[in-house]
Length: 346
Image 1 (cartoon, rainbow, N blue to C red):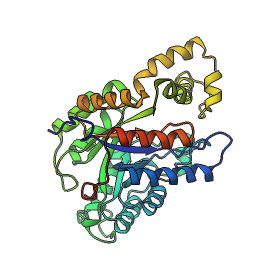
Image 2: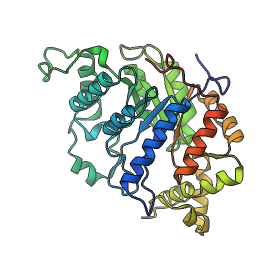
Image 3: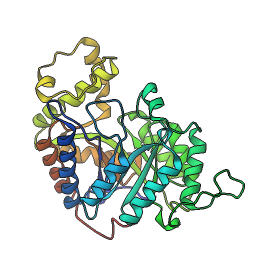
Image 4: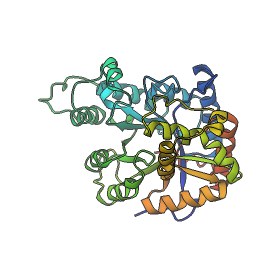
């Protein structure tokens, strides 16, 4: 069992929501992401994943496959992919075709993270017109298409996927509860846990995954990732200031406020919390890691050891681009990240 023992062994990755800041626009949001992808590739971050969200004006991460294609074309070494493709919104065959193409274009650099939820509200989910099959059937079809091993009596047995089983991206299940991890264990897939959605379950579920993993044609050994929002800067004071919009947005969201847009720094710093929002804000403290780079590095190492993972994925909620770029530079320096091409292959 591999446990991260020091910051040099700990891989760092990035989860991008492609935020569209207030008084900005989608084009600027995408340009910001391109800048971060290039920097992350240069600094030695291990993966760069994109979320899938719909029906929001503050994010433009609607199509992780297209964003992955763009990111791969703008970088040379870093692995890129989805965190994740929300399978209920998609045809399994089309997902396989798209990610087979990505893997063929950028061999050994593509990841496919799969989610069980729709990533949006019910009305928008219906508008997306995803498959009506349940998730277990969707996942089974997707894996069968990837492995090119569809039984002769299967309804899709005559459907051919281009290429062969060498064009399979690295496959991960996403989870924030006990449901997703069972698919990862039983099907022999990687597993990424969203600690910001369910912080108390992160450690026990990630440990259970590693202890019960069943090897498969997709993955011979367990690969687990702890995803968590991280806000860091050179000083505690600056980090807390930068974390203001993240804390306010989540306090509003869990208090039932209709306004869950990403606040500005100025809005967050002058906002007066209601007593209910303040309670939620305090309860949310375990969802994030906030502080100076030295303190953040210490906390990330502790989290990795507790959860028995050797990779942390930073869920990116920085409120502006300059602080975002600086934070990733600080993290890369503190964790002694370096570009090792062999390490980044399959």
